Image 1 (cartoon, rainbow, N blue to C red):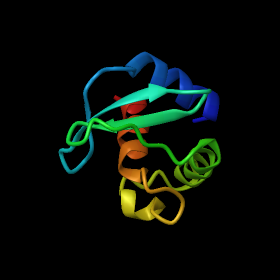
Image 2 (tube, one colour):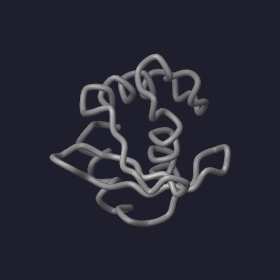
Image 3 (cartoon, rainbow, N blue to C red):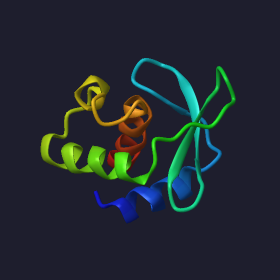
Image 4 (cartoon, rainbow, N blue to C red):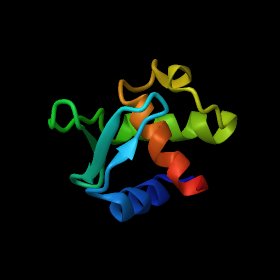
Length: 90
């Protein structure tokens, strides 16, 4: 998946309720061509920026590892990013 495809996916799912592999509900949004995530528990948007998302994608594309812990050194939003990219596989 490319970064542009990630943005297209985020746009398609914008505002819809999604769920991490641990069952946490969240929504995705886009700001300045960068996805951000809104956990249902806080309602506050969070993002590590485009560079973190691109690094996540680079590793995800190589490993296809569905475990957020595999990406925690790249982004604190790994559980949301994994859940988002897995939507493309559904």
